Length: 600
Image (cartoon, rainbow, N blue to C red):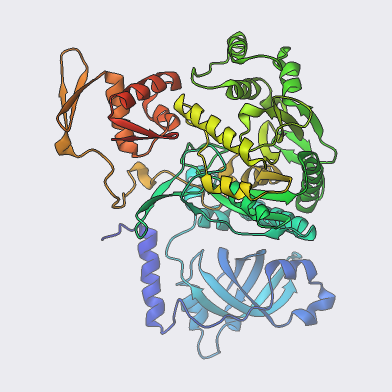
C-alpha cells in the first residue's frame, strides 16, 4: 500500500537515511541513563547547589531551536515540563570530529526528535536556568512534523492546537503540544487513587467482575453484542456490574467495590461515550442514609486532594463540595419547581400533568417513567450545587428496597451536581420474592414497548434466595466526576481516546460476522402504485407501509436494535415506532427479545 507523503515527511525520511549512512542508529535499543528531570532542575537548582548539578543526564523531545551559528538554544520537553539546553559546537564530540554537531545536530535533527543530553546546569545572562550540553544522542527520529504552537518569551502558549477532531483523534500529539491536557489526566488518576485509598482504608475489597456477560443486567440500556464461538451463544459487553457485586455480598464479603468499564450501544454527546467508567460500591449492613454521609465525606476529600479546596470552578460557576450537601425528596423537588404535588397521582393524572407542563411523553411508559420525565424536564438542571434527590417511586427502581415508612416509594437517592446525575444509590432490595415480582413488572413494561426495561437475571434471583444481608450500594460516574474536578465541559476531554467516527467520514471496516439478516433469496421487494411495499418472506407476502418498510430495513441493518437506536436513524418518534414495531412483530417479520428487536 502506497502512502502519500508531504514535503516535510519526505525531507525527514531523507535525513533518516543520512543518519543511517553515518553509522548512527536513529532508534537505539540500549537503556538510557536518566538522573534528572526538567521540573526537578527548575525547582531545585540554585547557584549555591551547582556542584550537585554537574553531571546531569536527561532525555526528551526537542520543541524549539534557536540557531546561533556555532551554538544553539534548544527547548527540551520531558514528562515533567520544559527546560532550555545550550548546545555549543566546541563542546560536542572531539576536537578532531565535530560531525555530531555539524551533521547530526545541525543538519539532521528536527523539532519533535527525541534526544538524550548530558551536561551541567547553569544560569544564563538573562537569568534562565539551563543545561549546558556536553554530549548529544539521537534516541528517536520524528518522521512527522508537530503542529506549530507559538509561545511568548515567558513560555506562555498563545496559539494552542484547539481543533477537537484533531485533538481527540490524535491524542498523542495533543499531549505533546498542549501541556495542560496532561494535567487533566494526572488529576483524573489522582482522583481515582483518592477513591481507592478512601475505600481501602475502610477495609473494603477492590474486585474484578466479568466484562463479557450472558445477560446484560444491572441497568436498562442497549448492549454491545458479540458471539462466543466455542460455546456457540450470544454474549454482551456489560452495561453494569451491580448484580455481580451483590453476588459477592451474598458470598460473605462485607464491602466490595470495582472501577467498572461499562459499554452501552447508544448515542454520543458531550456527556456520553459508549465506553465509560463507573465506580460501584456495595457494603453489607448499611442503608442509603449511611451512604449519603459517606459519599459527602468522599467527594469533599476528592476536591481537597485534587484541587486543594472544596470550591471547584466549573465553567462560569463554582461548585462547593464542603459537607453537608442539600437533601430533598423527588416529590418535594417537583413541587418546588412546578407548584404541583404529584405524590398521590395515578398514571392518568400524571399524563395530564405532563400535558399541563408541556412535556411530550410516549404512550407506552408507566407511572415511574412519567415522574422521571417531569423531574428531568423541570428540576434536574436546576441543581448546580451538590444535592441528594431522595425517595423515588417504586416503579422507577426495580433493584431498590421499599421505603420503611413511605408506601409507594423506595430508599434511593441520586446526587445531582452541575445539573446532571453524578451518583445513584440504594438501600438494596434483598427480598428474593419481591425482587422476582419487580423483574416480572419489568417484563410487562417490555411488552408495552418500553425499550429501557430491565432484563431478568435468574441466577441473581437464585443468589438472593440464599440470603443477602441488608446492603447499601452506589454507582459514581468517574468520567463525569473527572469533568467537574478538572473543569472540562466535554467527556471527550477526560478520556484519553474517546470514541470517534471513522476517519475521513468513511464507513468503518466491518468484521466478518455471522449472518443474522434475511437472505436475499428469501426476500423480494416490489413497489406498488399505493406507495406501499410488499415483502415476500419464504413465499409469504406481507404488505408494508412506507414507514414500516423504512423501520424494517433499519432493523435489518442494525442487526440488534432498540426503539432509541431506530428513532435516531429514522427520525420517527418513539410513539410512531412503538406502533410500527408492534405491527411488524404481529406480521412475524420482526421479533422482540426484551428491548432488542431483530429481523426474523
